[in-house]
Length: 95
Image (tube, rainbow, N blue to C red; front, side, top):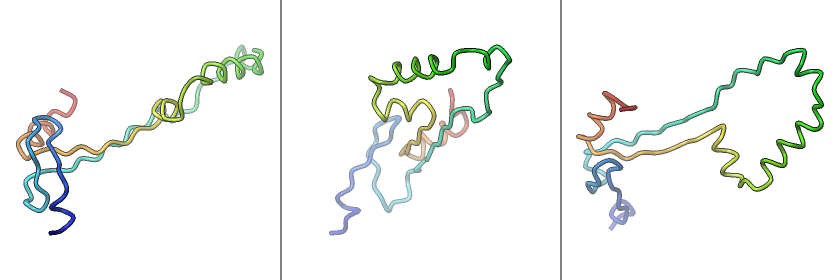
């Protein structure tokens, strides 16, 4: 018995069991990154009390977990989809 025999995978969309080695499912890897464009800073922004603003941001983040903070800027996911669900998903991934 191989390690692949112990793996239980299911289609994320329909719940069908996926059997490794049969070639009947897709692995989809998604990477989402927040807008990397630097912010536009005005003269008013430069005149603001930056120390106070930084402290406000730190206070807002104090009760957030590392995961919550990370997911605001970066997210990686792996999806397992059966052949039928993949065919529908790839044609309209946001629908």
